[in-house]
Every structure is written in C-alpha cells, then in structure tokens.
Amino acid sequence: MPKEIILPELAESVVEGEILKWLVAEGDELKKDQPFVEVMTDKVTVELPSPYAGVLVKKLVNEGDIVKVHAPIALIAEPGEVAGAISDRNTEPTPAPSIQAQEERSIVEPGNVNEDSGEELSLFKPDKKPEQVKNPFTQATPRGVAVAEPPRAATNPYGRVIAVPAARKLARELGLDIAQIPGSGPGGRVRVEDVRSYAEHQGSRVEAAPQPTPVAPAPVQAPAPAGFPAPVQYKPPKGYEGLEERVPLRGLRRAIANQMVASHLYTVRTLSVDEADLTELVELRSRLKPEAEKQGVKLSYLPFIFKALARALKKFPSLNSSMDEARQEIVLKKYYNIGMAVATDAGLVVPVIKDVDRKSVLELAAEVGELAEKARAGKLTPEDMVGSTFSVTNIGSIGALFSFPIINVPDAAILGVHSIQKRPVVMDNDEIKVRHMMYLSLSFDHRLVDGAEAAMFCKEVIRLLERPDLLMLEAI
Image (tube, rainbow, N blue to C red; front, side, top):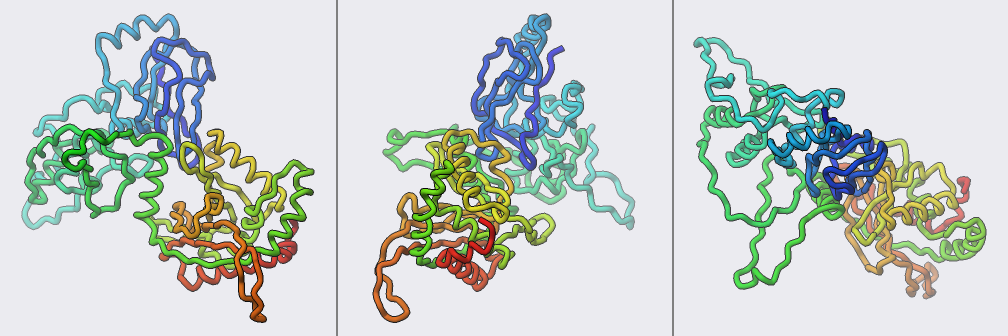
C-alpha cells in the first residue's frame, strides 16, 4: 500500500510551508534521503529528503500551494506496488487539495497520518443531509429552562478553526465569525449546514453569493483581525487592461508581503530619528581592520553597533520585548538576539545573530559575514531565521538619507542605520569641524515603548558609538 509523505516540522514555531518546486516527476524512483521537493518556510528555502525509498506515485499538492506541517504532500510506493497504485490513480483521480483543504487535512494526528483512510475524515464527501446534522440552535428546549451557550468551533493544534472550505467561504460571505459556529462534523469540524443554521439563528439571510467574473488570483493576505474589511480586488483602468502583466505572489515575495501586513496590523509603529558622531569609531575601525583581516575576518561597523545595542537593550528592556496578543501579556526577554536585514536578489531576509551580548566584536564580525553570505546564496536554515528580540536594517549601504523601517514582528523595535557621511558640525566651543555623522531611525511599537524611553534608548546607543572605548569595558 502506498505510503504518505508528510510535510515535516522543519523548525520550532513553523506551522506551514509553500511548495516551491518539485524536483522529481510522478513515476520517478526515489532513494531514501534523496531531495524531492523545495519548500519555503519563513523566507527559508529547504530541499526535503525522501523518508522512504520507492517510486513517487502521486503529488498531492501543486507548486505554489501552502501546506500545513504534518499534512501529506505525496504518495510513494514500493516498486511492486506501483502498477496497482497508478491504476487506481488513473481510474479514480483525486484533485490536488486546495490551500484550505490542506489546512483541514492537517488536523490528523501526526502519528496516524498514514492510517487516515476512513470516510469520516474525508473532506471531499458531501455534507450530511440537513436532517442528519445535529443543530444546537434548533433542538427543542422546555420553556423556562436555561440553555447553555453552544460550544465554539473546534480548532486544530495551530489555533485555526476546523471547517470545510465551503463552510469557511459561506461564513465569509455572510459576515459571520466562523470561530463562533459550533461544528457537527468529525472532531467538531464546521460544515455548511452548521453555518446556515447559525446564520438563521442570528437572523441572517442565507443567499447564494453572486459569482464574480473570473480574474487572476488575488494576492495572499495575512489574516486580518476581526472586524477588518475584506481585501479589495484590483481592477485596471479602462483602456489599459492589455498593458499590465500579472505575476503570481509566490515564494519569498509572498513571505515578505505577509510579514509586512502582519507588522502593519499588529503593531502601532512610531518613528524616532537621531544622529551620531562616529568619528572616533571610524578611526578605531581603521586601526583594527588590518588585524581582523589577518584572522580572516572582514570588520564592518555592524559588530560595534550590535554591541552598543545589547548594552542599551539591557538598560531599556521594553525595547527587547514582545506582545503576547492571545494572553494580553508583555514578554520581557533576558536574551539578546539581533536580526540583521540582508537584501538579496530574491528579496529581503532577516537572519538572526544569537546571544550578541556574549560574543566579541571579532566573533560578531565573522558571524555577520557568514550569515550575509548564506543569505545571498539562498542557504539560510530555519534556525538562522528565528528568535530575534530586536532587528537592524542597514539602509546606509544603499544611501537613503532617512527611512521608516518596518518592525520585524514579534520584535518591539527595529533600528535603521544610514550611511556615514562627512558633514560640518558646530562643536561645543562653537568651532566648526568636519565629522563623520550617521542618522539613526528607530521604529518602535508604541504599545510597548513610550516615546521618551525610545529617545533615551537612542541616546544610550549614540553615547556608546561616539565613545567606542566604553565598549572595551566588556571583553571584545
């Protein structure tokens, strides 16, 4: 009997992945541990090795599909089983599951994923007839007897409501929160009849929504909080329809888009701009750079900035925090992992340098170079991308004068560092000197950080950068 290959849990907190590219075709023979598909998770592309040896009988998902962790993506069979498996596939073709269907299939317990052959767990069978569905809103109740509030919809291990795609679609059309609708299907799954019954109970009119004219798929959107309007479908201006090109929102660009929308929806961004006199730091780096090169390390300004940030974050812990939306708690972190935005040909990625406060400037310089190289080569691992507590984006490498960096959620803040330029500066004794100056742009979540605290944090970072000898108080 063919075995299912599931999408494995590639890293902690990763719950889904995008199928970027199949490396083999149906009917190809696979060796154990042979890469067979490229998957993107959180801006990282990995090649999955086959857990079994055999022949790839069927791909259960298409390139571009979003698949939940532990959901089946392919069938593989022993060579002797291939003929029968292919025969079954030709006589009873099964459509590739949609993104929503993948989310539903992911509710199967990981240990039983190859044993799920029962009809009760199928998402492609018709809904039960109305009289077969137990509707909590239409059960006879004696007068004067209090009725308990119906249970809410069941959720999968990732907090997503378990519902068939048609029910999810109908709930959206009726403006209903599917999380409030109790399900009568297997495991509490919400069916179409459950949505209709709930709508009738709420006094809503259940009407078939008009079918829109077929258009190109809408961009993938990050889930908006309850109450936000649905995305607006873009329409070209009249007379210019033939002068536009549509490119599917996939891969790294889709991951970036979702992260940006999440940052916009779940943070209250505010900007603080300041400037630092880096003349002494420029001179220090010039002296240390040849020594670093002798050890095979390219010394940039970022390691010094990271060390200054770690010191300042310890002094102002609210900037090293996150908001736990579900529990309405502020999470103050006692570790200092700094995300480093890196521009690549495919888009922006943010690898993370762990435990910055425990590493020397040379160690940080080596790690900065290593992660930047991996990012541009597309070889970052999921572990390289998770766990940031604060982020830095080096706009100066491009040359922008100012910027308003987007917060890398769930971080509380991100610092934009700009180009170091020689500018005339009026000194304390009113003397004008040419100094190496740099602008700093701090974006912070105003729910977690007050404006005064953000300004004092910037001043502390600037104090340490303008007096790099103060960083020597720690081992470097």
